[in-house]
Structures are given as structure tokens and as C-alpha cells.
Length: 325
Image (cartoon, rainbow, N blue to C red; front, side, top):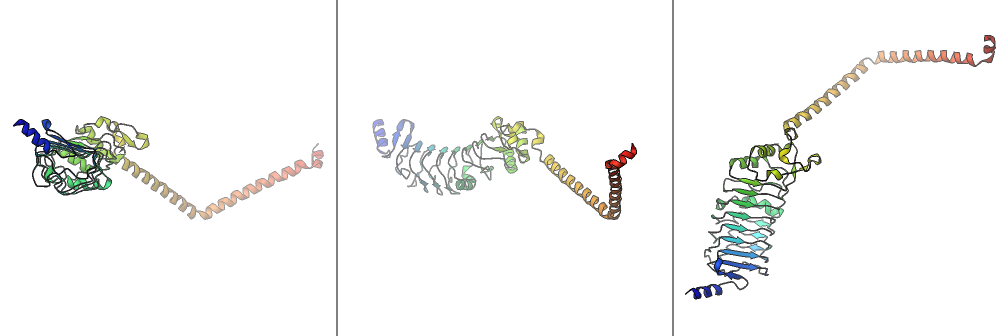
């Protein structure tokens, strides 16, 4: 009976794939297939679909006949996937690990992950376009992902945290390394703080270490939720480039001090302007006296010059010199 069982399983293996019964694994690698194999065996536990040209994951892509599969691990990296249609993973109720890394996701339906109540790990590294990143937040807000423990979004050039809600998830780890995040917004910090068990990974982001980072800075100093806090470096401004964010001085990120300094400069400018106006008004009101003062100085200088001129003429006349002798 065991031999017959193996033979039947072998016959049910998709023609472009290889099947390993001992681990219940089906591997479909480096083919030009544009669709997910439609004749997957019911016994498959791990499906590896890599290096193909599956640009679109259509509705019920893995169970077109409506039969639920026992797939627990689904690896879909490097397939040029650009679109995930609604209910694409319907029929995979036991799926716990989904890897969509290294694709080029442009369109992500709000119902893309519907039906994945058992999903624990979702990897979306190096796979989001700018447009796809904008749609991800809604797709992750579905109640279907309430058991998601780890979300990886590394290497996607993200500038913000693409999670509108954390309360619908059960995240233990959020990986946001190697993106383009300059500052973690206050709303995100508040959400992180509400879920104490959550660990956030943020290394290799170009943080802007101005007073805008104040809330994030205090969160790093007072919380242990950032698992790689010792590796977060300032990228801007140039004077702080390469400095650890958590080693900044309090005054470097104190927005109130910056605001007071700005107000001080403004106040100083106003005072100097008022002094200038008063000075001009004094000059204007005393213009008559100033004019007489200038005339007096002019006449005194003229009289002095006449005296010097007279003495010069006497010294230069030789006859006057002989009489003196």
C-alpha cells in the first residue's frame, strides 16, 4: 500500500515542478510559467514558486477548484509579481508563512490577504513600488491578519511607516530596515508604545536629527522596543552625520529651545529696528539744530583753514624772511 501511495503522489505532481513526498514539498523553479500551477497535490505542505514570470496572483490562485489546501509555507520570491487581486490566497486557511520578497508589487488589493487567519510571518522585502507602498496600509488593515506576528518590509524605500492600524494585528516584530525613513512620526510612536511586546527594527535609515526627531529620540531613550537602537545613525544635518541617534544631546532635539532661540532672534531684530526708528525720529525732530551745528563746524573749519593759509603765505615770502633776520 505504501508503494501505491507514493506512485499516486508522484503522478499528481505538476509537470513543471518537482515534488518531495518525505517533506510534502513542491518546488517550481526558474520556468517561464505565467500562472500558478493549477494541479497542485492536496498533500503539499510547502510550496516554493521562485524565478518564474507570474506577474499576477489572481483570485483563488492556489485553489481554482475551490478545494482548501494544506499549505503552511508559501515562498513566492523572484517571480516578477506586480498585482495581487482580491482573495488571491483564498483556499489556504492553514498558511502560516508567506514570502513575497523581491517582486515588483504595483497593485495590492484591499482584500489581497483575505482568509489568512493563521498567517504568522509575512515577508515583503525589496518588493514594493511607490504606488504599491501606498496601497499596502489598507491591505494590512484587514481582520484576516489578526494573528500576524512578524512583518518584514526591508529595502522598500519607504519614507513612512505603512501601518494605519496596529490593533488589528498581533505583531511581535516589525522590520523596517534599509528604507528612506527620516523621522518616525508621533502617531507611530504612540501606536508602538501601546503594544509593549512589539519589537521594531530601524537600522539603515537616513534619520534627520533635528528637533523634529524629539519624540522619536525620547522613545529610543526610554523604551526597549527598538531592537537595533544601537545602530541608528544620523544622516542629516551634515554636522551630525554618523552620530548615533540615541547619543544626541537633549538640546540637539529640543524643539522648545529651538523655538525660543528663533523667538529671541526675532525679538532682537524688532528691538534693533525700534532703536533705528527712534534714532531717525530724533534726527528728524532736531534737523534745525543739527543744521546749525554743522554750519558752525563748517565755519570753524573755514576760519582755521584761513589762519593756516595766511601763515603759509608769510613763510613762503622771502622778503618777509629777510626782515625777520
